[in-house]
Image: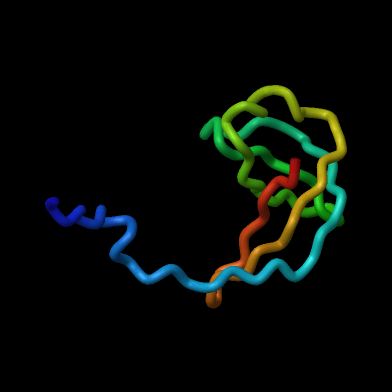
Length: 80
């Protein structure tokens, strides 16, 4: 039986993810990229990563958002 080769994505070391905060934000608009929406957070506009199945379905609605820290980078992800 042959050994299975690892894909380039499997060979990279994944940085640990740390979910530090969960909040509810209002979705303002759909971003040009269908995997992102723009939400209002205390007067600031932040981009939130979403699943492609929610494209154009979240605009104008409050959504749950998790703050994910990957090293020095802080990102926001939608929690379904």
